[in-house]
Image 1 (cartoon, rainbow over the protein chains, first blue to last red):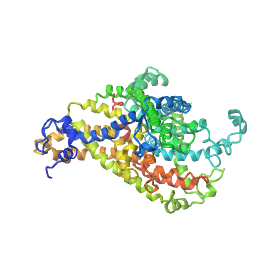
Image 2 (cartoon, rainbow over the protein chains, first blue to last red):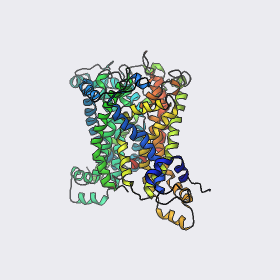
Image 3 (cartoon, rainbow over the protein chains, first blue to last red):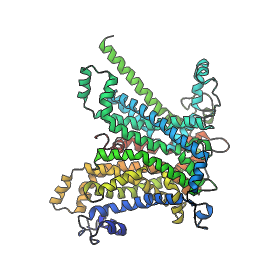
Image 4 (tube, each protein chain N blue to C red):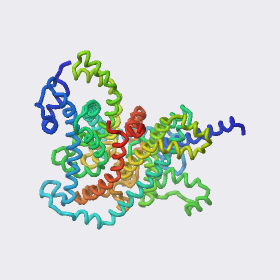
Length: 338
Length: 283
């Protein structure tokens, strides 16, 4: 093997920031590379990508949110004009913004709660099943988690189809009296679920719950398997009830797992896009927008208003950062970032 | 009831609950696959037809030959595969270098970099959509798969580094030290000792990036205007036509898009879960 290492090559193709910023040592050949410079050279390409594709655009987005960017500006025919806070006032005055915000928050609150409850229940169940059965169920639920978001939307749109959907067929199976009592109707044939914002979100909750509870279940299972069995035996000898065991042993020990799962679920459910996009068939039903779709629609549906779209995206990002600050602190605390 | 009978009853109840969970998870997937093999008269019906008794491959045939939006599904599968593989190849190399730096060296700025990795993972893709769209247009990468590859590398890299670093850290340092003592150079040690041991982790990380890129909808939606550049997630939208939806065809398309992902997923699911909640479990 020759000694022209990837380290040296990495350094050559990304010379400027890697060296200028971190490595005062002279640019070196592989052999002579100072040991102190090695980590910076290794890090440089990745850092460049993150800076160029994530951090810089983030700054640009904030900048754009104060500008007017329409078709002439996109095509470079006219320079973007500075608008100050106009985009933001325009957004806050728009009632679609408030309904999108409400949809985003309510959807996330309900879905995160349901996902955690169902996931924990299934995780606990898996822990009590025999080895073969639990592997069997894990494979089943993981295949639901693996389904691409677009396909998830397609599947549930089909299950909730007005005429030939399985859900309406199943609801028709309910005894007429019961169905009448619960929903005030007995005939579900032709019930359109995906026309109205409220029912779109019902379907979306089921869809996202279905695809995200497996991850919670498997994580909880992994956590449960790490708890020493003696703890449970001792508790049982002392006559503790199952609920008390869960509250006093399982929950405190799994608390770090639960907090990470909660934050991850919040992040994922806050920015749900693909499933909603498919369920409502593109950005058409304004009442059913969440913040992601609202930003997308303002920026890319004609006439494009990129400044307004950017302002919405800034607001969404701020909300997410506040929520995730907790998560980052948690990780920094427990992980010691080794 | 004897304690023995009670235990058995509990066992049966637990297994039944497990089976119920399994069915809830698997039925929608099964329904997608089975619909794609049903003849139209069995699809568009208000009856429940659990199995395709008139088994047919006409929908699969149709999406492959006629396709949608003017091209065969093969083209969109190919585009998706190019984007996902390109993302993985570039991303894996970058992630491996960075993860080695983090896991094997102590240097100033290391903690800051790790926190940066965490923070950038929170940025919603929608927040980057507008500036990246404008930049891609300016750079002349609009309507090119390369533009999508570059963006997907950016989207997947922070998590890739984050996940891979635990795999690098898991390799005992003493192995590398032994190689150094035997006179191996830094590069030889890397390729001969560290790399083979990290390879399984690299595969798991790559599969995660592959799936992310394969599933990506929102950027593909705005960066590809010409239908010959569509990826699968975008192409699937075009099955929802004005003249009613061709459910057989869209289910065949969705199935083709889903199967490779599910197969990959089942291979690495255990590692992926531990990567996502790394730190929390042992905390």
